Length: 237
Image (cartoon, rainbow, N blue to C red; front, side, top):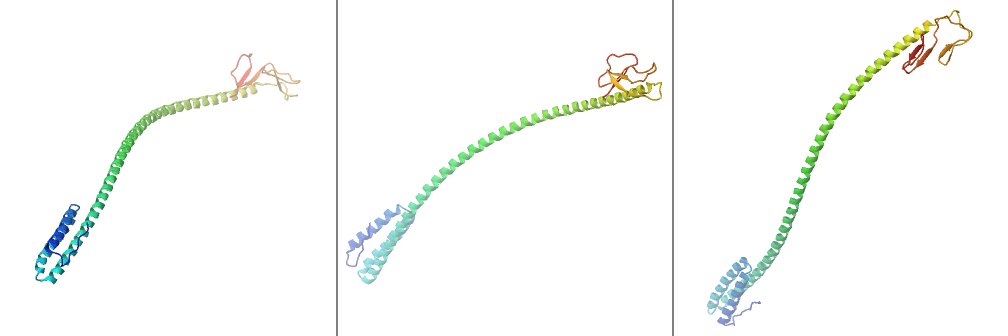
């Protein structure tokens, strides 16, 4: 509501009514903010001072006029301050609503983060249990591996022993072969023709052997099977 201006030609009641209008307006603005009320009280005091000066204006008209104008200016200033305080209060209310919305969103985010943390904790526990099971399996595998190594070492020892046995058999076979060769006696100083093996018998061409000749000489990778007196069977490994 606009404030009415006054002049020196207005009556005392007009001054009083319009001054009271200013006070009422300031009282209404005091509801919006405490700051506005303080300014309104200051304006009220100024208006009262103007009222006193108005009474004195009957004697000092010029002084009263200046004081009344000063009171009016103060009243307008108080009104403007009250409007500014109202605008500030409205802006503060908007900020408070925004802060409330942000707080609600932050609370929702915190709840979501709490749920995620709980899920992560459960996943970590599951991973821990799986790791423990894997560790137990690894320990079992390690025990089995150690047993397998022991078996492999035993097999290697057996293989080495078999290899030694085979070498011994080879030495014996070589000795038997040498003995057989030495047992071969010829009545002639030379052998005419060539030695061939026919059906596992050693024969010659045009040569006659003494009675102690080898009747059968066999070289094989198998053990002896059958044969006659004086036969030689050499096992090659």
